[in-house]
Length: 75
Image (tube, rainbow, N blue to C red; front, top):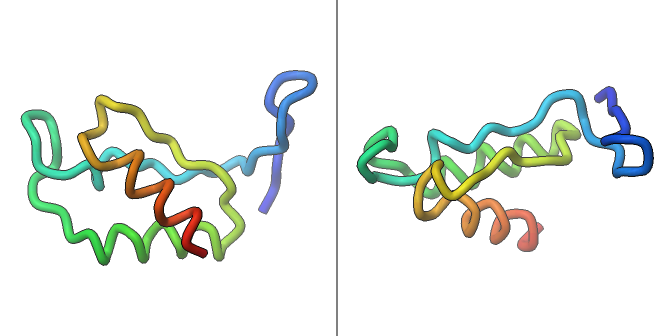
């Protein structure tokens, strides 16, 4: 997986990241019902493939950040 430096002194990030909008959970602007097990499998698979960053934001849904952090730290 190719990486690029973030800025001039930042970390090396993969050119492809994991977009987490669709796993944010059911809410007004969300994608509807979410299968937590499948979401966690997708995040783990991204890490297995070498992706080293997750695009997440509060606007993506109430559970996205917590789920992605829990998955990252439970490897």
